[in-house]
Image (cartoon, rainbow over all chains, first blue to last red; front, side, top):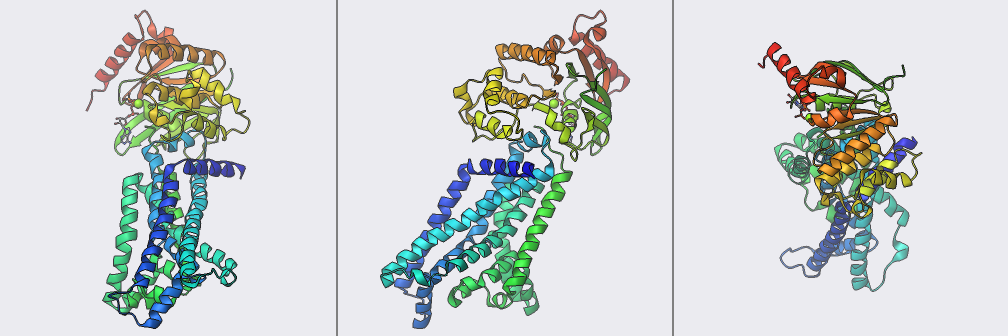
Length: 291
Length: 246
Ligand SMILES: Nc1ncnc2c1ncn2[C@@H]1O[C@H](COP(=O)(O)OP(=O)(O)OP(=O)(O)O)[C@@H](O)[C@H]1O
Ligand SMILES: [Mg+2]
């Protein structure tokens, strides 16, 4: 047990000593700010999109505290921005150990493969939590400014802080399958480039394309999409979004087929477990070249 | 006699249809330097990969200090230090940061041990504070040796350790290895520098196409021949005429 703790701390040090983690956190924070800025600007001056006034009002409320705080969190969603950041982080953190040949540095000292992999997975958890936290903080600043600008005060009392914590947990949950599956791909391919390519390709392209195509095929096919990680993530995060926000960007047939949050959470955990199991299965059988 | 530090029994490694290591058995004793020789592709690095629990042996048994070593059983490797080829590091960490990280694996080692090994391998403190990506080949090699010695292992496994060292570094390495062996450490040294091996090692084994063709104390193998180089050429020539290349 202490050995696993020591190793986890070593892995965390390896992760925090890298620029990549901090660059990702800064980038995510800035992106969340910028996206909110763009949204606010668009809602200020909604030319082109002829939205009914009620919808516009609802969207604006969605950018203000307290609603906006929850909405901002969804940017870190595994199926969206969060997933991209996680793919890059996990790929670099895991696959690069192969390209640098540093896996053997630990294994040849009697660190067991089981502990090595477990420590890596554990060390990633705080990093994922940091991604969520930065999104929350950055979103709080952005929506806070917007609220201040439009209402002239911040409604602190209306914010359900405990609920916000639970929401953060939900978002973290949506990141887990992406992290675990990337870990598996990294171990299987032993290449940072291939892992990033496959991971981003899937997250950016394949998953969304699958949702679109299956939704067009038939109602039965559309129902299948609810088992994709991105749709499970959407289902878990449904309570975080205002009715209007939730309608943006998803084929309606697929949206109607979303699972309830509870089963969806189990689904996300199942993907995570599958990813970890696959990584472990491959890792224990691997020959690790010495140079 | 005391317990062997390293024992290989009928070890085999196949890569697909290629037999890289073919029925190798050998023993290394405490305080002994064992020279592991052989032409390119003979199977030296592959054998060392199995000794370090990185490669799965196809058959046979490996023991370190009487305990089995495989990729699934690695506890005995805590007593082993290794420097294999061009040593691997995290480019963004300093040499000292590497040693500090590795030291955490051994709770009994005091922080001062890091300075001790840095001095032992001749890596100056200012250099040790720089990121490894700024190191020369020889500096990396020295850091690799420091990492291998950090936990005072009872078996030191070296695969071409003098790669990239300057003549002074090589002489220092030679002296250090002799000193470590005299202190009771067992050394398993693979190298193409036969002259070095002859000066440092007590016994040698010569591997050819995965098979151990000759093994014994250096003076016994010499048998009137000029030097280890001659032994090497004779052994390889005899083995290749007996089993011509396919
Ligand atoms: N991952 C691998 N896949 C397939 N064959 C391999 C692999 N690694 C090594 N081999 C083969 O195994 C044989 C032994 O290689 P090894 O690296 O052990 O030789 P070596 O004695 O260390 O040679 P050198 O002196 O050049 O370092 C060679 O024929 C090599 O081509
Ligand atoms: Mg080799």
